[in-house]
Length: 378
Ligand SMILES: Cc1cc2nc3c(=O)[nH]c(=O)nc-3n(C[C@H](O)[C@H](O)[C@H](O)COP(=O)(O)OP(=O)(O)OC[C@H]3O[C@@H](n4cnc5c(N)ncnc54)[C@H](O)[C@@H]3O)c2cc1C
Image 1 (cartoon, rainbow, N blue to C red):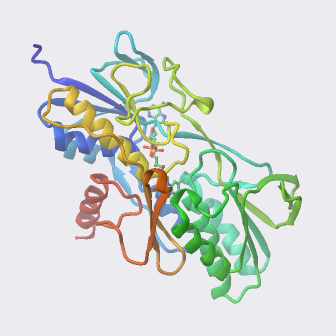
Image 2: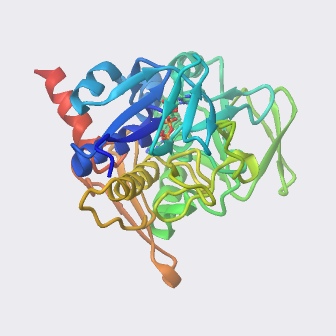
């Protein structure tokens, strides 16, 4: 048996990548050597960005150099070029060749505009994009805003949060605004089950947000939305839409579904490929949630640890969607657990359902970021 350490190559430095790196440190320290391949220098707490245009929160940027030192891993500042699965090597755009014994693809999703003449949410510039809209609402130059969810796998939470916080701001400032939300879902946040949907529907109603479900939008002309199949025309001053999501491209990996998303089994192994795993938004799981990315990353890490010889009993992912919905008032803690033939076991609470109550519920990343935040606060 070779005494060389088992090389784990993780591509990406987002939620799934960091969760997997932390899980490997816990379960396979001394057995594996982990490399993180990603171009950026910082990890950003993206969900917190929805609070920035309202002055409710500021998203932290965490140094990947510090994280790499804490986790005793190597951060290769570069991007994936292509994967040679036969030779078990990743070629980077910077012309490096990185060998692996196990590869975890955690490259997230690419964002494309879903409608013309709209503000398509870009997580990297959310504050810049929406600050002016909120100011225009406060100043009386904007009276009607539509928030739109396109079809396909999307990040569902932020658009509800933005609609709720915008309506709350208008109410607080005694502004007569017309806020609407159009979604292809059969009910608000239907993927989290009935209890969550009912609570969110009530909240939208209380904030006087006109909610159109099972609706698909097209833009008739700037300022006019058509919602099908309801044949509903909405005249709006601004439209804020989620982007359509497509999987990040991974040349060399051809086992992708429509949109480029990768099919994985319960242990996050890419179907049909040896020693290649995927977790997070790049997978074909139908909704894009950080909490799900973390569960998939944990399953991948356990499976990789066992492959490397660590004493771990890998368990398949049990899909549980958890999330915090910021509302402008007290946040709602949401949980939807797939319960076989019983549908979805759905739960809503005003008090946290997990600890620490991080915006993205992740077994390792939540406590780790909490410890970094506490150190920053000292
Ligand atoms: C505004 C907003 C709010 C959200 N709120 C919540 C929430 O409250 N709760 C929740 O659970 N989820 C939320 N989400 C969804 C959540 O952020 C995503 O589901 C999660 O980040 C997915 O993790 P990931 O690791 O798959 O992808 P990402 O976190 O997007 O990470 C992808 C990584 O891959 C890297 N990468 C891409 N291409 C390459 C390449 N060629 N080579 C190397 N590296 C590459 C990127 O640089 C990045 O580091 C929100 C999303 C948004 C946009």
